[in-house]
Length: 424
Image (cartoon, rainbow, N blue to C red; front, side, top):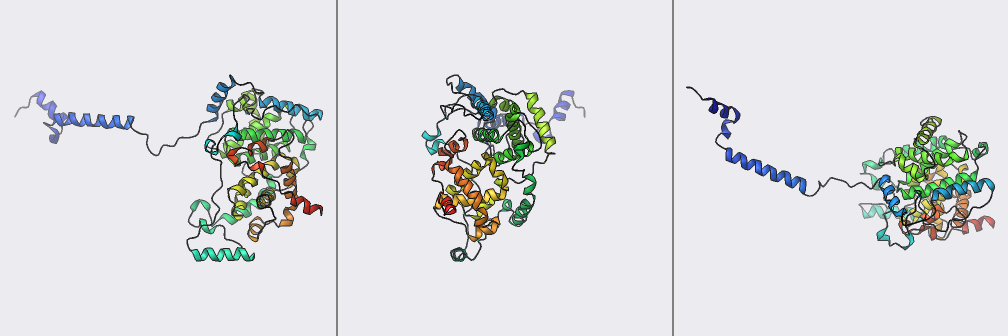
């Protein structure tokens, strides 16, 4: 049998089960095209996550608002404060607390916004105990009332793999052993020929505002200050490079902690273009080499999370503790205390501030390894910082915690009775 060339071609191209089905094939193609259109024009895939805007997007917003507003850039305030600290004179206080930390002016008034308009503040993991058996709950409460037992603060996380209940005690025991590596001499500023304690305080106060405006994670701020102190303790820095040290320390901390890292151009912008890209990258290399790339050291934040859980902290207590510990970051005198002691003292002072009386139970003492007497000196210094937080020129932390975003925590009354008991 002889097959024509046209018939041979058609049989070679189409399978036997599809021969004679040209019409159905066309319908299938049309159906697939409709499905493709639905996939393209339909709703986004449910697993897609909308990430928050990067700092470069905020940079564009700041430039648009700068055309309408004329506030004095905070970078110039930073330079004025540094110059004033050298001459031991006070520079003029900014007329408005609404200055933009990005070197331009923005219209922000947190105090007049409703809580619904504010971004949700970062919170720690849930610390309230969750018990499936009501009888078990009653037993724990009786132990706490008697003051003889210690609460099992990890029992509620037994089924949470991320809580690593099996290793958490060993982890914090290791943190306590190596925290001294990240500590610096409380007198290291004496070796700096061109810097003083006041300049460091100005830098840290400014970085607290920058950290808040960039909406970075809490642990990033603590690591930033740790890197600055460790670097300045080993390297002499001239006054005009101090702000560059702070910017590079924040960049390194962001690379270590954050998912979205600010780009170099953003950091140059918030410094009012005082430094070039080349200078910033050179300082980054110098800082890493000086610190020998050692970034994995526990800060006060690591201990704060654990100690707040031991204190069964609610949102109000948590905010008060972080307000006090951020005030401590600015004060050079707090460097004489290890991070774990600063964290425990912040929780203890916050408990006294919120409750109005001394409160330090067996559970807190057990998990922090600090008694109330051991925390006394540091706690009194924190009360003193709280008393003068809204005065003077270094009010970055106070303004931050006076906003609705942080539940107006800074407006609470300090625990002055801790000082009165010392005087008596």
